[in-house]
Amino acid sequence: MENTHNFILPKTNLIGIGAIKDLPNELLAWKLSKVLIVTDKNIISLGFVENVEKILKNLFISYDIFDGISHPNPTVSFVEDGLTYFKKGLNIFKRNYKLVISIGGGTNHDCAKAIATVATNGGSIIDYEGYNKVTKPAIPQIAINTTAGSAAELSMYAIIGDNSRKVKMTIGSPYLTPYISVNDPIFMTTMPKEVTASSGIDVVSHAIEAFVSTEASPITDSLALEAIKLAFEYLPRAYENGNDLEAREKMMFASIMAGMAFNNAGLGYVHCMAHQLGGFYHQTHGDYTAALLPYVFEFNSVSIPEQKIMQLCEAMGTVTHNRSHAVDLIIDLIKNLNSRIEIPSRLREMGLDEGDIETLSQNALKDICSFTNPRQGFIDDFIDMFKAAY
Ligand SMILES: [Fe+2]
Image (cartoon, rainbow, N blue to C red; front, side, top):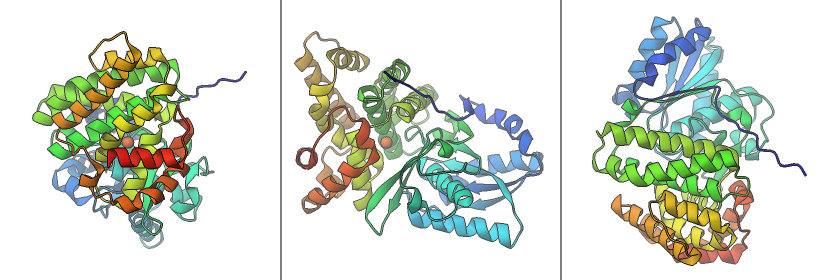
């Protein structure tokens, strides 16, 4: 019986305090090339783009900056604006971009992936919704990360909102994997408290969903468990004091490990449902996952092997020998972590209108993250879970 576990990641991952210093070596191969930087004005004002500009100038690499991403929910319109900028550079200024560098959090990396993909594959990003619809390599991308959460800097997925249909599309293809990822905690100390909380709890939801996924392997399991252990210990600290570099560094590792796990094991219903909420309303993605996680875990728990339930409990810092007690403990521990980092606990506090639940449930059922959820549900199950978290 076939049982394969391919493992996909960027070619090189620069990781740790000061990791950005290794970027020039990686860029040598692009000397005299043209680069498109994809970022937003806030990241520019924090001085992060200037750091990269200096590196590019020293290597005689010319660049342009697209900074048209203006809020934390990536949309088709940002991608189209980016492509217009790309084509203008190409046709008017003869900029034959050979590399895209995204600087920021998941939104900027995902928009850059989408721009780099459409630039070589043609059409519109909407054409590539789903898994493995992309047929040609995207323009190589270097993703310099400033948050600890989405893992978009190393994943093969882009999540892009299509406002015309009020859905968040998942576009998944190995061709979307950035060529190089950079995770330097120095870039993360300026993350505001609410971003630390939201992106940090997203790490927990990635790790739990990857751990219980139908595509999990011993490799993704060990990464996911360690990510959970680190996040439960260090997320409250990173939230309390953003300048706690040790806590930032540990959360960076947790984010990378959870990202490596879900990139290869897949996700589940928390993400199916959170993606739909992101298509309708404007709370940050991590907050939706935080509110949904206890109820989706409860739904899934009957399909998760006992050994995994116990391992999860232990990774969260508690030991019990009773399965149903362990399930209750895990749910309480997740809720407790959410409240320690002051994430609203109910979806109604995040804008959910009860009248939208049926449409959201229908859309969630179609999301590609549903394929790897450990228990297959029906529309009524989604409605029940949305209502439980409401
Ligand atoms: Fe997520």
